[in-house]
Image 1 (cartoon, rainbow, N blue to C red):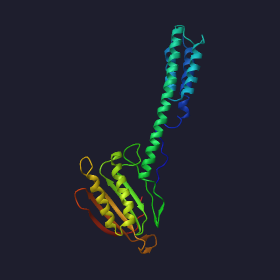
Image 2: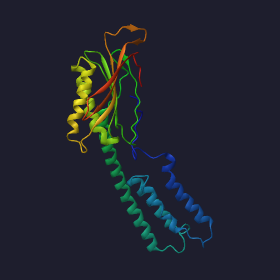
Image 3: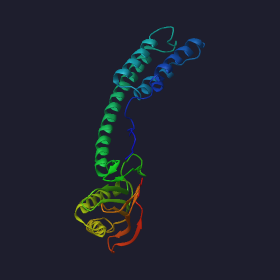
Image 4: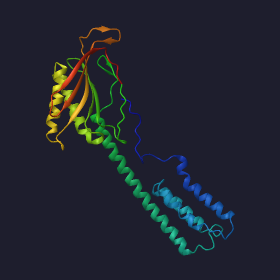
Amino acid sequence: MDRGAQELPGAGRPPAWLRLLPWLTMVLLVVVQLSTPESVQLGFAFAVVPPLTSLLYGMVGTALVAGTLFGLLLMPAIRADDVTYGDLLAFGLIGAVSVVLAGVRVRRDAQLVSVRTVAEAAQLAVLPPMPEWVGPVRCGALYRAAERGTLVGGDLYDVQPGPYGVRAIVADVKGHGLAAVGTVSALLGTFREAVLDEPELAGVAARLDRRLVVDSATHEDGELFATAVLMEFPETAPMCGSSAAAIRRRCWWTATGRVRWSWRRGRRWVWG
């Protein structure tokens, strides 16, 4: 399964140009302060730099920027005439609070990354990456969940080898997003067991239907359903170049009704 690199929001270092923003802002304020008349006071603007830095740096980086800014304000050539020592104390407090906020942000981001990593591992266990080959069948898959930030939604697929050939399923269950993950996990587990036990594809469909009937008893609205395509690639199918006989069965499952399906003979699918 081609998922690509998954980047967690808030994880990793910000871009270099973004990390330079506090320093560039500080330099810009100093240049403007030195090049404008004494009647123009920009002391209030210096107070913006430490909080801005806390969004981009950790505690050490924020403390370094805040300390550099405080040192610049101590220089008479840069400090405005109306900036008193009380104002300098306020600037120092703003810098200290910014350092604390930076530490809180870093800790929160670390917790977020940890939680997202565990959640990603759990979702990949439900719907693992598709191998390139399953027996004689070449496979490829690309799946993007509709709910942003999730890897598993209301759709499922799997290809499994078994004693009766390679079997595949592509299905859509009731619901979407994380609310449907429980049904997806139950159907995939049932499918993987049925592939090993059932000699006929009809038996696999019946096992899946029974799973939905049992789960619907504990469901909130008492109804679960799924629409699926089951495919089978028997090991005894006659080969002819890159194609072989395949059986496709389309099933509709409901919690209260029987399984309905249609059969069609066709070619081996290279699906993705």
